[in-house]
Length: 574
Figure 1 (cartoon, helix red, strand yellow):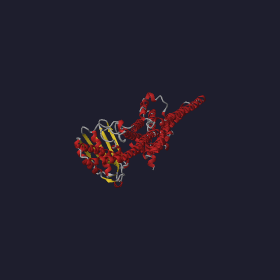
Figure 2: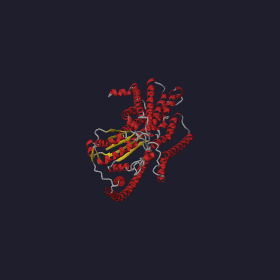
Figure 3: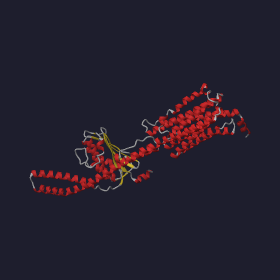
């Protein structure tokens, strides 16, 4: 071990090690800055607000590490060429600014508004000018203050990343916090004035590169995209930075006193100023908490209070992606779901009332209708006159039409219980297309089938689903009065089978699209307005749904959603 002791005692070797250390740190910070810049690139031009904030945070992280890289490189050059030690003011203050930029990247509510923070590095470059840096006291006098400031900033970044880990449970975030913790420890060692080669110096310059190596291994795109998004970060950062103001002033005065002693009167004034600054920092922190935390909560409470007066359409403007933003977003989703649930409940109540009325009317009408039909049939058999026969035929035809209408009403009021069995929907669609082929050709409509291969079976009643498909195709044909194209497609996703019927007709207006599933509502000159209501009811009876999307001038798409056969789900491992 004598050789190791000899190296430690070799001033030239340790200085060379320190220069290489700073160069390695500069390279590591440049690599991390490159990763952050790549992570800040937009995935697409229509990014959501949360994605844009994540991109802005990554951009701030990139500039923060770039400042650290530049500062380390200048630090290495100062020692390599033996330049004036006062140039180290620029490098160490650059470290502080780089770390503060990372604090802003993690804690800022809207990081896009804080892009000016890295620009503060430009005035620091003026410290490289000899006529400016020579105006400062000797660097050795204020060196402890600068290093303890770096330790404070690194510790703050580590604390914020620990809070990020608490919220995200991402192990790489915890490793990143550990890396900055090592930087904080190394800066504390370097705070103590010690000659090159002393144990304190060695510990400081061993922990520092170790911390950056940990950062190189831990920081990746996933870590960078998980930063920010919590009130906790802003509260911690604001409290720590404001608490540091009186401490920084006190430390500056203590270091300055080593150069020029302060008299008793000035000391009393200093104590008063420190108390005043501490009070001002506490006041600013409390005011910030009120503005950033209490005010959004009061707005949320006001929105809840006014919910009963203004209805379920009221929403809260979501600002930021922190806990309050998530709570506001959850509140908006809740009101939307409740609004849809209330609308669906009202629709079901109307359907139930209509069904009871329809069943009563159909029952009351069918009894005398059968008597009218029977009487007409008797008259037709026993009255040979041509005029009487014509009237009898008209009566029989109208009785048949009303009878079919009554049957439809009874089917709407008391639909048959579906016989749920695994059904090949592709085969079902082919059978429906054969049935509707003649009507499609008569109306000049081109029907195109897009059937998904390997479609899993649906658990449904084949006859009832066929009825729904026929209703949808008839409606599509009627919408294409002058010819057009109807597309019928099948597919499966998320445990359901989807059957789409799309047309390129005139579409449905927003005013009418919410009414089309109501009984007796129709925009056609023929029909009863019960087709879609019955189809919707059949879909609900199957545990599925009938959805619609329409745009005026571009057509409509009706999607029948059916549950997939559970046996198929188990086989496919869904």
